[in-house]
Every structure is written in structure tokens, then in C-alpha cells.
Length: 302
Image (tube, rainbow, N blue to C red):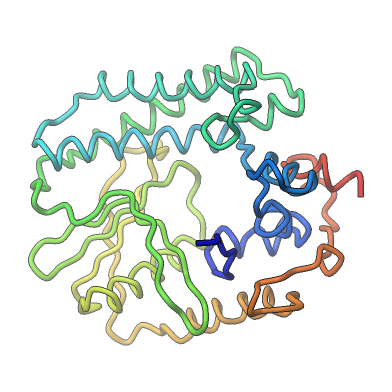
């Protein structure tokens, strides 16, 4: 069965579209089939660049994967991995990814090997900066363990861990990544690990998760609690449970997603085949964004 690049919507897609339509094109269209040896060179180039990540994103990925491992072990065996062991796991993940990027292992297999933006574009990473990033990983894990999570959650309460969920909205698919869902009786608790600063978009993101739980699992909105956890908080992090009221205005959320998707769709010359022409996309006018865009190698030559 042939792979099909269908249109879908996600928060990350919406964000990139608003930042730069040209980067959006490369990330969601220009790269397609670039993993195939028979693909055009332009597709291969876009595919290579799409898989670049930054040092800060690597830190966040390591933290999320480490917490996922700790929770998975707890759910499957009841074993609680102590902090020191968890931090060593995170360090190993970080150093392995960093070394693979340094050695350009991605040239052998792009998808399975980290390619850091800083390495690819020749940006120096000082020892101090590297230690700072490792310190950030440590602080996130310290705060995770300060939550005393394992004393409040039984293994049977864990409904899902780090799942990428899809569900239909109007004529297209929405994607939502749920870090952790706890279910106690009829109540659902949605946790979202944050390794960055608090953002006013966070509540909107989590409200979409509630929409997913209500529509796909038949939950009552009154029984759903959302909990963004800011792991870099200087104060001891807490489980601050937020709850949407029964009369929450989901319509405003629908409209926001629909308007965003319609803007993307308006650029397509064929919606059925999700076909977009690069010439129908505009480059950002914020030139500072280009300095840290992983597609700048392609973009600046066209």
C-alpha cells in the first residue's frame, strides 16, 4: 500500500505555518518521499533538514523519554526507578544523541540518528553551554521526583503514557500528544510535562486534549482535570489541576482550529491530494527567524 501524505492539523503545524509558510512547505510537503533512494534531490535535502533538531529540543526530548521510561517501568512492574538511576538514563540518552550528531551518523541513516542544528551549521557549543543543558535536564528530573507522584498514583490508575493520538475534526485529522493520562473511577487527569516557560497557549492546547477525551472516551467534562507541569519552575512544582466548566466555550476552540486549517488549505491547489506548490508559499519577513531555521540551507539558495 502506497504511503499518502494526507492533510492534518496539529499545534506544531499551526505554529510553523504562522512563523513561515516556506518552512511549513519544506516540513510538511517538500520532504515527502525524501527517504527513498529514487526521490528527487530536493526531496532528499528537505527530508535531511526536516530531521534536524536543536540542543534545547534535544533536552526536552531526553526529559520526556526518561519520564516515559520511569512511568512505563512503574506501570508494568510496580518498580520505582530512583532519581540517580533516572538521571543516569537521561545522561546516557543525551550523550549518545550528542555523540551521534558530532560523528554525523545521520549520514548513514537519517531517521535513527540525531543531527543537531548547531553541529550541522557549524555553531560552536562551549563546554559551559553543554553543562548548562545537562543541568537543565537534571533540574527537570529533580522537580519531577519532587512531585511525589508514586505515592498518589497506583499502577492500575495509569491510562496512557506518551501517546500520539489522532481524531477527526470536520474533514481532516487532528493530532495530539498526551504525555500522561491517569484514570480514577470516572475521572481523567491529563498531565503535560513542560520543559520551557509558561505560555498563554498552554490552556488552549490542553482544552483540545479534553475535547479528545470527551469525544473518544465518552467522559463527562466535569470529570476531566488538566495539569500542565512546568519542570523548570524554580519553586517546587505542584500538581495544579485545572478544570473546564460544563459551559466551556468549545466553539471558540473549534473556530480557531477551523480558521487555522482553512488558511493552510487555501494554499493547496488540490485538497484531495493535499498538493501544495512551493511558489504559493511566502517566506517570513522576520529575517531573524531565518538564522535559526533548519531549512535555511535550502531557502537561502532559492
